[in-house]
Image (cartoon, rainbow, N blue to C red; front, top):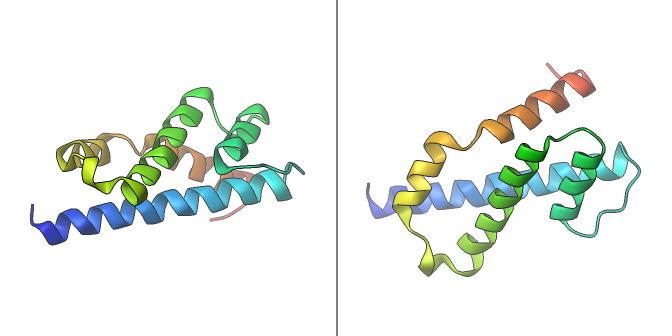
Length: 107
């Protein structure tokens, strides 16, 4: 994998995590009437409201924390682990998206 590809993957993971942060905060506020203090707190609110399973919560929290590593401590990241994670760890994200699409009638 080239340096350009590695950086592109890192960038896309940051973007995905930031979209998840915005999405969960929005749903917690608008649908559940909560006032989350942080995106992780918003995920906990969604979990407690039955919109996210415990396993999904844990996976998505790891994604958000990983985003923080990519943004703030990028020099400690192992690109091989990123690549392996991409191949196997987006089930929780897809499950959340599909559940929200069904809940809000989004095709």
